[in-house]
Length: 95
Image 1: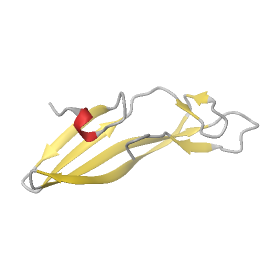
Image 2 (image 1 turned 90 degrees about the horizontal axis):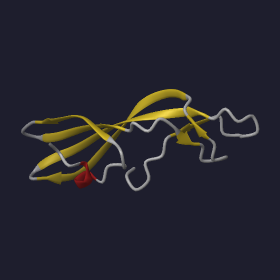
Image 3 (image 1 turned 180 degrees about the vertical axis):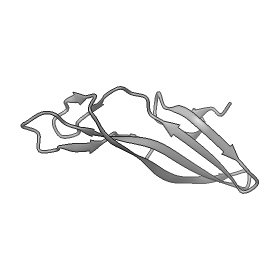
Image 4 (image 1 turned 30 degrees about the vertical axis):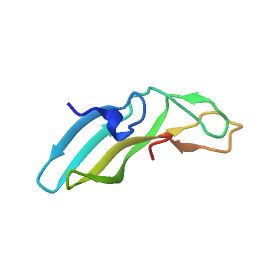
């Protein structure tokens, strides 16, 4: 099993799959937190608006490229006074 601490992965992230071939290691991660805080008003919301994949390249390891694929969610802030309607979950210290 691949220790996610080696990648500096966000806390509580989970390994979806890892693919190793002769040229590269591709690691697919997801963040399972049920909510995210709006960066503008701080409201913690569970309303997922959409999803996308962040594609990151890391430093090579043992002569192979390391590619990270992180499933990230966009959340909708339901607070009527908040000017930020949609925001992406944060991955502090990671990306």
